Length: 288
Image: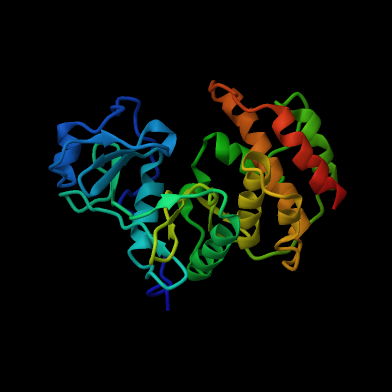
């Protein structure tokens, strides 16, 4: 079995806390020492410009310490298969998964390729099958960031009030939503750019932002990203049409991505995306 046991992983932090703003933008000597990294840290591409490599160790500041601990502990229970592998976390010297606001992973061979969307979807399906049955993480009740805002709005846990960024796109999607009854589970909410490919190895799933939604919703997010940003053909929208409530998953995935821009505005972060980027995909999904 890919997952060793079905218990809820122990958390390294007793309560969810956000890392304070004093976390440095680069790993300090104390951070490197905590994770046993002896090489000089150099920045890596991607990772929102906050990911560093020190020899065979990859380091990144974490937002919610409880989420970082939960992800790391969970992945210690997930076995690699012929269908997927995962990045392996590194414990700090004190045995915890977070040190000085940073987390660490062993370097994972491979490179992302967002145009290999079918392989990303297949790896995502296998990864989610391995996670089925895990309890809903408690830290989700406390997480508050632009992406969580977008997710909650898409799933009607927050109201669409009008006046949101790109409201003209969100409103017709909201009208097209219908109730769904699909089992939720722990899923990866940003698959497309976070699956690594290397010759002779199974695709590797990295940088796991945790959501508790139907597994097909996470695949729909990857499809929406491919259609919006990576030139995927319109036919990709129908690639998983045999899944129950697939079009409703596409609607919610699209709302999630669009509404995250409103979450950014509310958090005082810049809104860099444009409605024109999403409009063709909104039209495509609403025509289905």
